[in-house]
Amino acid sequence: MKPDNSITKECSQTILAISDTMEILSGKWKVSIIACLCFHTMRYSELLRDIKGISGKMLSRELKELEVNGLIERIVLPTSPVAVEYRITEYGTSLKHLTQTIAEWGFNHRQRIIAQMERTDVPAAAPAVI
Image 1 (cartoon, one colour):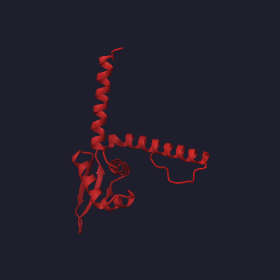
Image 2 (cartoon, one colour):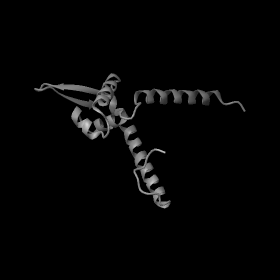
Image 3 (cartoon, one colour):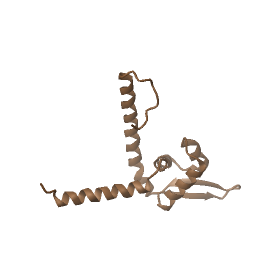
Image 4 (cartoon, one colour):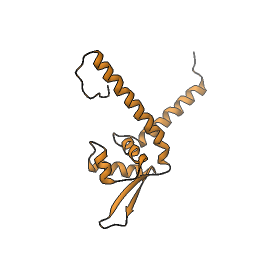
């Protein structure tokens, strides 16, 4: 049976849109940075402290990429020494629902894995992506 061209085209467009999104949000840290900034404006040092495991160099790189894509903005404060804050842009807030959905899925997945480990008497450890 030959596939319906409209369904094939819709699938292709969906895959392209997902690919574009993943390109912008690629890497381990961007979604976490966006999620943090959806709650409030933060200084560089606060982000570095709150996002466990990220290096300063990586945080700088990710912040620049998010800024280039218009998802966050960098605000230089008129202080001495100079302080910098980052905040989500109006456009960036369009990702808040996505970050909440990802967090909810991750929480549910973690609970599922923990329950599975308890049923099979596997020693408790932090669930990892399987």
